[in-house]
Image 1 (spheres, rainbow, N blue to C red):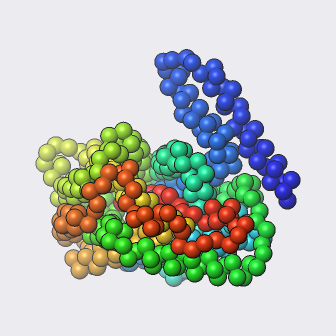
Image 2 (cartoon, rainbow, N blue to C red):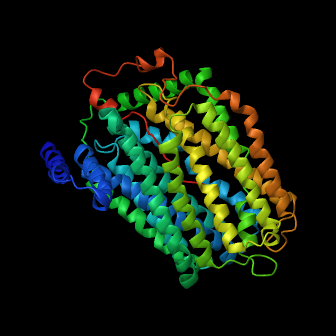
Image 3 (tube, rainbow, N blue to C red):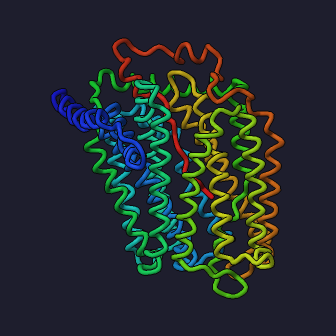
Length: 509
């Protein structure tokens, strides 16, 4: 096994050695230099971190989260609307179940951290998530006359597969962030751009597939990304661990993880910003399903957008999301947490009034066609959402204690997911209370107005966010100088693989 690992490492080294020679001749300027710069950057990451790791990030964030996530969003909306023919409020209630696997991220984190399979912490979970995703997708795409319950179970299976793969690759990112901290920002940039590029491709093609194959047939395309996870599980580089006293170690590590989470969350510097992030997400109630049913309704005066155009709009939004990442990286990454989150939340609330303008058809009064206005609204919304999300993610990484980063970061992401669940649930309640149905949208504007006001109300909790800079250390020294417990002798390398995950969320709305 050691010889096999050595061979895999040599393969990674060889994949990265060629870029080094290429860089020696990269003195040209102008357009060629600009085009080659991203290529050299990826080559540098392959050389420093390993080609299989970089491929893993691209497959998970680019193919499974970016492409499959965006494709799934469009195809699933049409599936519930056209195949299952349920009301928009019902779809919002059902979507709560789709998010449940993300709430369970701490469980998946503990599984990958402390329950190795045949000496491997990561490979088996990639394989398992791939098989689960392929199975659920196959049943959903080929099942004739599926009941709503069966369809929900398939959707939950797909979501679970993506969540497990996300936690697993985050653990690999965390290990490399510890080994080579100078490359941590580069790894996050690789995650963000892979996800955005995948989303661009997924949104661009989803409408075409839905139009030609139908919503259910289009969902069959989603079997490819989990199949690649199985491939990744066999080929990604990972050291095999020798297992001694496995049962004792598992329960020891489990107790360490739980005690570390309980100890850390009690600190005000941790629970206060965590509470703000939860409130910021929960108060932004989701009206997405009501708006989707409205702007795809063909009866005048509704916009009646086609499947292809819906995909194009989301594709443009994916580009805007990439622009949001660049704006944050170039302009806002040096601002204090409270300052950037205050203005980002303010813009988030104000930008929501573009939705209100669209639903009330005021854009036509202003002489702006529906197609132009919805592209404008989607672009602004995605840029603002990204600028709002990025500092939240940085803040979350600053709250993780030494020795339990993986499990604690998963806990923070769990809190965020609960906030999203609350937003979905409360949005469904509002849509149902206002009698927004498949054909009646007369009160949809009230739901959108209430959503915008609730977004602005989150500013009342901004005092919970620290005024520190984004480069400052937030945790007390007691949580940074030592882990929650001392590892058994000779287990230092294995402990590295248990450290935290610097996760990345795709835009929800």
